[in-house]
Image (spheres, helix red, strand yellow):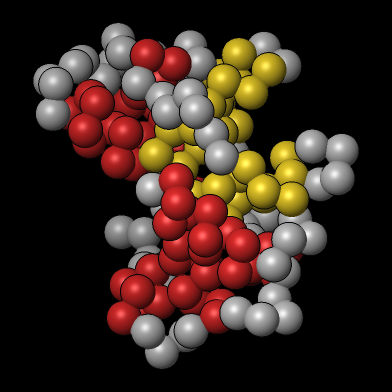
Length: 141
């Protein structure tokens, strides 16, 4: 991973949804964009992140109604951030230490500029790995 920066491997497409967005709408947005996470805002403030795993563990497993449950009630509020010019290996270390699969990426002014996932790291840095093959984008059906 030496020589690679977070900005080299991150996903620049960031999808934002409000905390008041119903869970079923958020799931449709994620499916249409072929992504596993969205950044959640409360007005102009970053409120957290919603992942496909949050939907399964905090909503489906609890049998919450996806039409009436807002994403603000199930999001991960404690987000991890890394600066885009940090080494990609630092992102991998941070993921391991914090037990997360995704990290928000910011610029020097702490403005959000992307997301880096474990899959992004695998696909860019070790394209022949099993994780890279699993993480490759499959066509949306």
